[in-house]
Length: 292
Image (cartoon, rainbow, N blue to C red; front, side):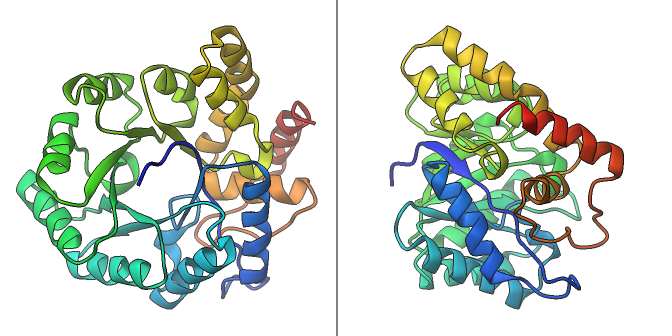
């Protein structure tokens, strides 16, 4: 599967008492992303609070997202589990419901060796025909995979076909491009590095930003691809402070507060996560006025 452009991340709405998923409001979030002209939708990532969902909730969100999108764009399902058995369970479910691919992260309590990580990916690949996006997100998952190792997995594991790099080190992206001769698609997972990453050859940008600022990320992507460097730079710096803010203040909390400020309230993040405080909300409101 060829994937490119903006990969939009929906947040997961909860009921008023925070005890269940609100699928109706999830549909509203998906509509916002589709209106922002994203190239794909990636459910159950960090912004979607996947780590805070029960198995039944996780499956509800995955199935609803695939059905609601209804083939308009590809649907990527995030899988980040401590055990290989549970990762296989979720991956098989993603295939059963018609997902387009999975985005697989190794999640660590004990420090994992490269052999353990490789075996984890290989076992998941053997359990499904779905393409796998290798996701390196050391800050969240506790595992940091080198470009050389991820490319080794792409070369040796049948369904591992692309990489999402979120370490925050632009040199990793240059290495992926150089070592693969530009043949392995890679995606930017760091909002504040979007311009550098796209200029480094990234096939796309994975972000929750379109939930709040519409198609501005897509405009940036297209400006880079069309060689309009000055326009791309202007678009990026228009978004930069906002992109930095939503990451440093917590994606789920920031996006949910932003949606509420825009009249699309979908509830708070799940505890122990907290909604933005008064000062942060005021700061976010000021940032959002720049996009009106």
